[in-house]
Length: 405
Image (cartoon, rainbow, N blue to C red):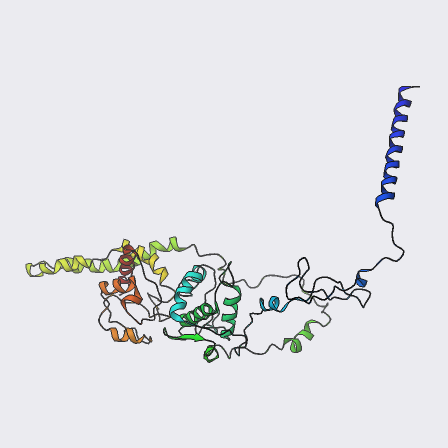
């Protein structure tokens, strides 16, 4: 027998052996197809669960969708237990339905907001980077670029409570107690000048709070007025030969503004102007009688470099205060000429009673003490800022404010 025939014979015997083993395995281990296989729609429904304890290993929420058979169910899961439904039942209606019993003050809300919310929304709810602003925007809804915040846009306070309770703090939702949510909601109202600093929000007075834009919404009737137009047969005649872009977005703020470093030289030049003006005044005295005035002039000398540093520090103040040409009152008064100005003297701004009763003048020393810890320096102030802790920041921002006489 040749060598090739021996190899062919061995291969044939090997294949035959494998087939015998495979048939034997299938005969012993694989079940045959039943004559009347059970369809998915015909699966029996699970036995009802009578115990209050959730059974292990079953999907919550029975699947009730009908199958192609028309009268069956998927047979998966079970009916959710009352306590499981309650765990998701946080919705609060505009009329106060669903509000839990509780209360929280603006004072407590400030601390809670600083600990849980300020990293994204700012210490005064002014927003950080591209995180949402919760305060401000009053009177801007008719502008080309309106600022939509809780104070300017939201029609119902219940939405604030509901969302904070359900979804905040970001990444650690539902850790706040009912009282803490009331306090944070009260602080957001305070940040929008809708309540005073002694206000306490509770389930009893919740519906008494009137939101400025409560009348700014209408019933959505598009299902009746517009949907029929969209669902008509599309026009397929007189189409344009080409499509061109005729308008572009005017606001592209999806990334943080990086132009700050470019603006610094201009700000420094502007800040230096008062120093140049002051130079001739310092040089004018030539007689001995004018000599005693020199130390005072030297003490008041303007430092443009320090003012440039103060411009950066003032970024913490911009959410509430404006300076420069066209500055106006916002959450806080405009600060042009604040150094040396009488306390509570900004025209048209509604100051707290404590500020009105303070009296005096904003000297650099008075400003320094106030900005270091506003609430401790002036009891009853509505200014919610925690204060500047670094001496160099206090020196810099006061120097910056001097550049706006």
